[in-house]
Image (cartoon, rainbow, N blue to C red; front, side, top):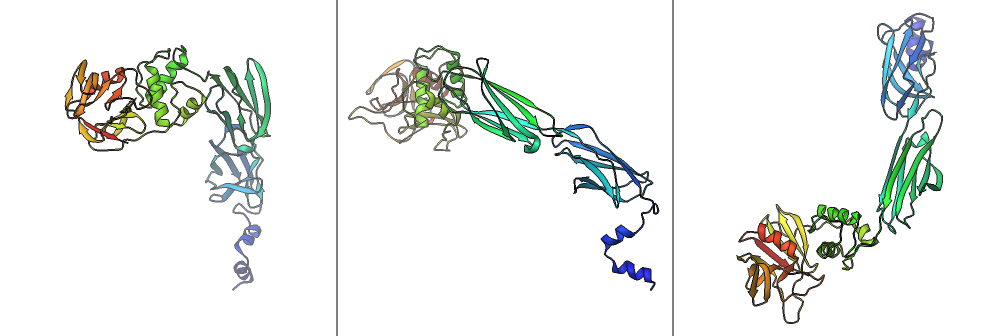
Length: 385
């Protein structure tokens, strides 16, 4: 064995790479590197370069500072390519053995995400939540503008969470701009909302009333219409929501109502068979119309609340329907749908937010009109506490 062979076997591989000559000979190759001047955060870009003279198959490293970002092999023509999702501006260079390329710095446009969390209502909780990705891209300046005047102006590192005052109605603008660190581009966002009056009651006329009706309908509460006037029928929709959510049954809409509307309790049907049926919850004083096992309408009810009377509980079925007024042992009923004996689901305005009937299940007139048309003979009715 020759002395040179013995040395080769004795030295670690890493040390051999330092002393062994490159495939192109003793001369150190020249490395060049090119890349786009700018990109967005985590967007994939191409770092392209060339080795001259070439060493085909040589593994070159893309380096940021002292950390290797990626590796690739040199092609036969001396070119090489890295595809990298970029999170930092650099500088970057390519290295192979003792050879090193020029430095490349790329400007990065960070992501600024911002939203208003809470309810845009006077007296309710409303906060700004902003995140800068990457957080190292700089500080986020927050300006809160009311009536054209800046009332809050501060900067935060990497993002911000700011409680916004909701003491009065009007337009609220939140302007966000970044104070970028070197290598990052500035970005900005602006959020606008209108703080609504928190209190709505019978007789109020406002676009907010119609908006509320749409929101309640989306949660499957029965609403009479999408009018901008708070009617005596609409108070029944408000009662139903307050009953299900465990709020005080005032029939008016205040800050507590709006706050609950942002994260409401979603009731579920107690029974699954048959898939289509009616449920009357005496504890909450509401009726659930169930289709395919899901609640599709929620109505307020008034069950027995007069001394000596009760509303029977159990599983029943609609056995008779009578259009218009009908006289029963429990009184004169509007569009009754009888489910056991003289007990019926029937109309009768107003429906108070508490038990008040002689034993029947009283619902608002606009609700019985829908149920009378949709519910067939034999429809199952569950009544429970």
